[in-house]
Image (cartoon, rainbow, N blue to C red; front, side, top):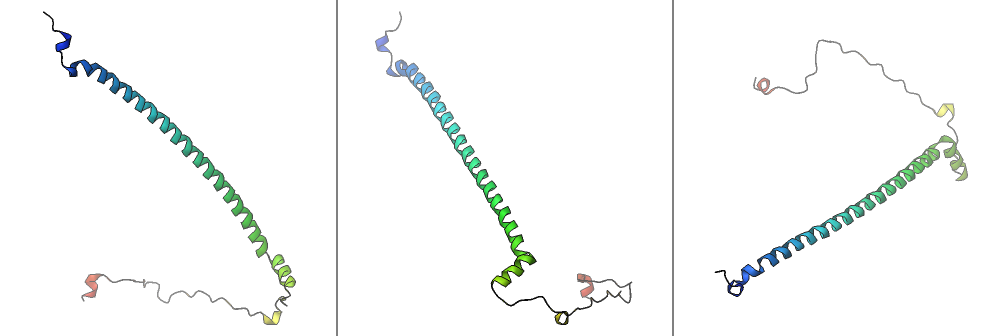
Length: 126
């Protein structure tokens, strides 16, 4: 004689329903995680693109400023600026220039001597 359905426990009757619910929640969680992950990838890609554009802009600005600095350091520009500010600067007269002779490198008197910068611990004891 087969068992009556009414006499079965509630856990046995709800088992397949709970398994199906768990499977649905797992699939839904995976789908939400996938969408969230794709959204994060898109946002990070956009941030990288924005930062690369900013870097290119800053590099262009740096190049322009370097060129401007080179122009401002040129002797022609310095002379023009000194005249504009009426600083009274003029090129140095030959009598105002002092030329120094560069000393010649003298060879050491004894080439067999080597420079010793540090002593060994065993040599210090002697």
